[in-house]
Every structure is written in C-alpha cells, then in structure tokens.
Length: 142
Image 1 (cartoon, rainbow, N blue to C red):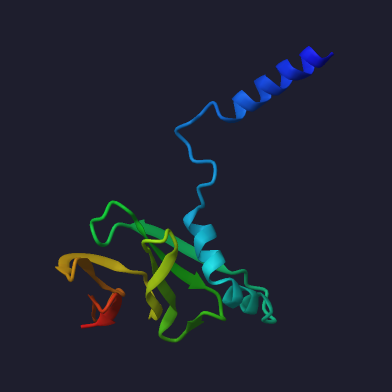
Image 2 (tube, rainbow, N blue to C red):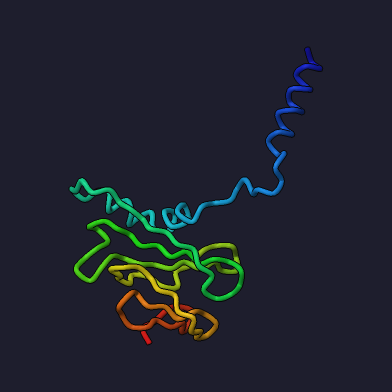
C-alpha cells in the first residue's frame, strides 16, 4: 500500500510540473488592474445601478523594453462622465510591481499609440484629444 501511494504521489506531482514552459504564478493583466484599483472597483459596485463594470484591457510595449504596458479603460457610471471613461496605463517597475504612468485621464474611444517617441516612450492620444508625452515618469499633455 505504501508503494502504491508513493507511485501515485510521484505521478501526481510530475503531472503538475510537466509543462515547464508556463509560469503557474503568472497573473493576467485584468487581475493586475483589478488588484491595483480594488478600492475604486469596490466603490463602483456599491453604486445603485444595474450596469456591470467592464474593464477593457490592451497590452502594448510603449517603451520598447519587451514588456507590455497595460492600458485599461473602465466602463461604468462610477468611472465615466461626459468627457469619457477613466483610462489608465500601468507599467512594470524594477521591483516587479506595477505603477501608473497615466492615471485619471478620460477617453471616449480608447488610446491611440503613435509612432513618435518622446523620452523613450511612444506618444499617445486619447482618440481626438491632445498628444500625451512621457515626462518625469508619467504621461502628460504636450
């Protein structure tokens, strides 16, 4: 009986790690955004509305470092107004955490990434608005 248990455990454990190419602890961009903005998301859920929160996610490498930044657009009355919906960009920082490089901007139609580079990052527009450039570690209106 001990041997059957040992064989079972060996087979079970090896099947867990059979695919070494995947990082089991990898976190999705949506999970990162939900974690970073947990307080705001909870506040949105407390609004007396029947509209579900939707978060539109796009991944783009804005600084050519082979790590995608996360663009998130929150679509819910808590995050939206006449000027558009809250749009944020998170970038991975050296300690493996994420930090906002664009926060509290409003967009009606998303983010357009231009080919133009400023301070190592692509210039962006919030479709139809001014150009936003990287300055002092965050995007600012040009």
